[in-house]
Amino acid sequence: MDIVTLSTEMAQSAAGAAKIVFPLALGAALFEFLLLRFIKRVPYSMKQAALSLLMGLGYARAAALGGLLWGWLYFLCYEHRLFTLGLGTWWEVLLLFVLVDFFFYWQHRWAHVTRWGWASHLQHHSVEQMNMAAPFRLSVTSAVSGYQAFYAPIALIGFHPAAIVVFILINVSLQVFSHTEAVRKLGWLEWVLNTPSHHRVHHASNDIYLDKNMSGIFIVWDKLFGTFQAERDDTPTVYGLVHPIEAPAGPRLLLILWFREWAWMARDVWRAPDWKARFLYVFGPPGWKPGELSTSAGPVGEVRAAR
Image (cartoon, rainbow, N blue to C red; front, side, top):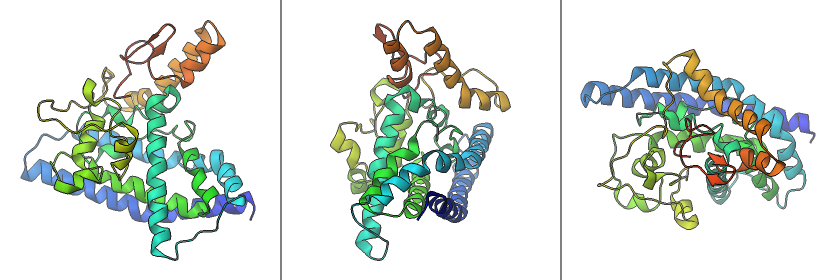
């Protein structure tokens, strides 16, 4: 198998899966909208939802860039795979599902603890209402931040890259259901799954909730690796960036969300006093400055959010 054939199979698998899972996710968002707006009479911002869906459309258009940038890595790993695994048995299906979720956790954590990763993730945390339109608020630069590279070890283990891509899409699509306030607590499932309650914590900008609950499907990763925080009755969640971006909804806000942090990063690297500072301005925590670790926002205190 050559890299061109592999990339083609990955693209075809992604396109086929997207035609199934994305309409289901969109249907769930529409159902929740009708429930909240017309039955529960809960305030629902159509402008925020429209912006999220528009960003999701932009992300879908740019997603092919991930295959172009990282297909070679999947190819290299699969060519040197330790085993050859398929989807012919229940345990192989379950193993691939769990592995994708495990590496999602580390990809997501990378997006929170490094400025390079955060530049393509802050968009998702800019939502100020928690609903099922929020998951569509994604960046066109995620491939540049290297999110896809985190799943390449699964190809080294032995799963075909095309199967990995399909399961990544299934994983992120299932996460749509954790973006809601319509569901409060789910009993014993709170111990195992990343429920709406746990994910509300993740989206909150309260200090106690920052950088918590970064799992995709199984909350056990946060509990194992020290990033878990339960939703507290005495600390209502406040959504959005710590320092919201002041711009009217529309194309201008869209471009600011997608590209301004990258521009600021380039500016800081250009002005940095030495190579260590240049490195930390890119791969240090969001908000890093020489001599201090800022927990406010971005390089000038405007974009830093639930990291």
